[in-house]
Amino acid sequence: GAGRDDDPRLRVVVIAGNNVKLVQRLSTALTPVPDDGGLGLLRGTNPLVTVQIARDPNPARPDKPYFIGSEELTNLMDLASVCISKPGGGSTAELAYRGTPCVLDASKGAMHWEEFTIKIFEESQRGIGLRTAKKGDIEKCLREALALGRDQVLAQDRRGGEVLDTGEVLRRQASALTGLPFAG
Image 1 (cartoon, rainbow, N blue to C red):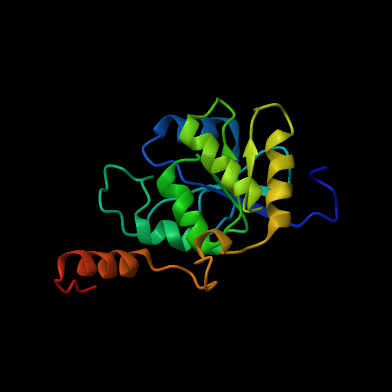
Image 2 (cartoon, helix red, strand yellow):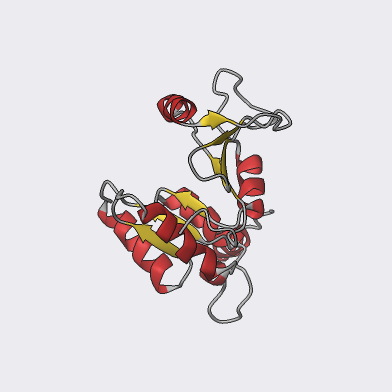
């Protein structure tokens, strides 16, 4: 279980977006880490785990300090060993392109298209569906997702194995349909 001497240290970065209540709950439930270099790290009962609430270093909207712009979000995904995300289309598409394994949160249920996404990620061994919020479930899912490693299999062209550039594919198709050039 968590807290064993052989466990590596783990930093959980929370992308709260507009969910200020989540930030307040975490800030109340967890303890600030002293001398953290200004990162705003928090800690719960496991001394090997710290939590950081992400802030965009160049926020587009200073009144929304926890909203992370796309460039910073992709940087965080590239640095992450695993991500916890809702199983929505935008976030999971980006996770597929980044190759980051993930835990897809369906602990309070999921819409039918989210269930489809979870199924595809699980079948492709790119993610784990979190179905309940029982104690220990998140840790179990995180461990399973970490074991998957990084892989861009969901973003690869099945014919050639290269990572798809969907923008280029759409430009070629639009050009073929209209006879007009479409620049990238």
